[in-house]
Image (cartoon, rainbow over all chains, first blue to last red; front, side):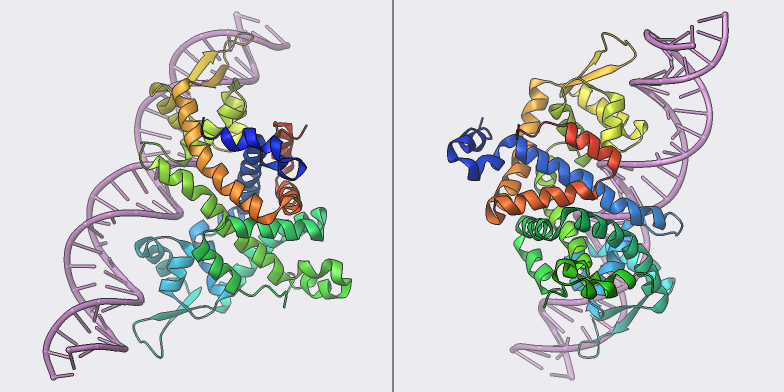
Length: 172
Length: 172
DNA sequence: CTTGGAAAGTCAACATCGCTGACATAATAT
DNA sequence: ATATTATGTCAGCGATGTTGACTTTCCAAG
């Protein structure tokens, strides 16, 4: 019953609140589900040819975006345990895709960088993903893209939103 | 080099194409990643109290949205193998959350329905998710929501977009 | 200079949830 | 009658997440 409240109340609010009915919200949930599935399918298909999975892709993505970031920062961005990340990171370092340099100020820290080989895989993976994103952006148009970004940002957990906003976006 | 093409070209296109730079696209990728993580975290937290996982949630969601749908349809919507779905579906039926009625026209088919118990869990899970979605919608505003939905829809694989559009959205 | 704590790495065990392959059953369709 | 379809099931495997325990390294504070 408690979830009916906001739904039943929506129609009273006039046009500006109509989109907050439960069915509209459920439709948004489905949109996220289907879109995210498509969004990950392209890199997944590529990764089948390697011995890597989605976890490797995510690590590679953020190392590329913030060269030199520490393991701890990467842990926060990915939201997994160090044991889980370690497994992934070790194979990437062993295979020569990622370089872990001992920190110069704090020697306990490791600063992570993509090697040339790592950067190549990153481009292959992200190009697949960017290609779908680009097509969707073109189909939807600039103002839709702005709205898309606004809603996604509002949906994030506050702590990660900080990290998100701290990243380059080429809009400046 | 091939992924530079569209990026380098973006600046030539004037204001309307500026959002297609590689960095803008990567930022969109990150937005999807962080938002999706938040989006799934609420129901995941609830599911820890039960013996169910994300897969159960997804099945419950679609059975609720299309009561009476067949196993095959659900398979398509979820994009998993029947072996994977069967494991999930069996536990839901055994625990009395889902009812599988033999089809009346084709007796090979099973039509799936939520029981009262299943509907209760569905509401608990989806309320958590809708609550976050509602807050994001409110924060971003109606026109942002329209754009959000447009981009996500454009991102889907065509076959699933059909299913997506066939679902109730309360907009009619 | 010793010591406490932080950063990182590692080992073991386990759960979830994908997958493939093989096979059984029941019922429709030809 | 036979082929095909929808479903269910068993076995095994792989990727990725988890907790818990422990070690090593190293900065920093007493």
